[in-house]
Image: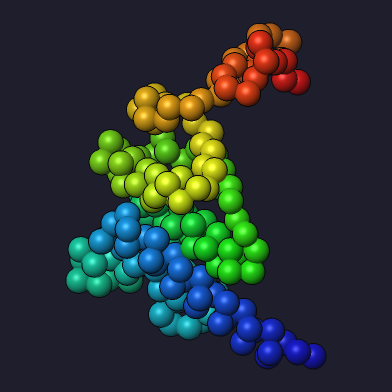
Length: 164
């Protein structure tokens, strides 16, 4: 039925994703490392090795908000890098999550995004976090005007474009 071959191929792809994600994660923090389920009961489930606690392996379910965000970002960047081997990926859009980060973690999360922008990638961030808004020079502001409508203001928007 192909189930064995499918699981084998998924396992190889999963291992490759972990490698790409760990490269990204190491650029952001030296604390955590992604590893497959150590018991191999769930071969396509992630765990996290905490290097600050003697290599303790823990589930992703008990990560703090900031840790979870950085790991999600590393996985997204790793997946993007994997996909770019077959097709070109020039844009990355992130929707929220930055509110879970303290000032230092925010710097850590923005560094790889800045590197990608320097490589010519378009990075879009959707956020309400004031500290983040201060660091992004090109912005499109979305402002509610009532009755479920909003307007866009910023570069590329012609005089307060209405949005439904």
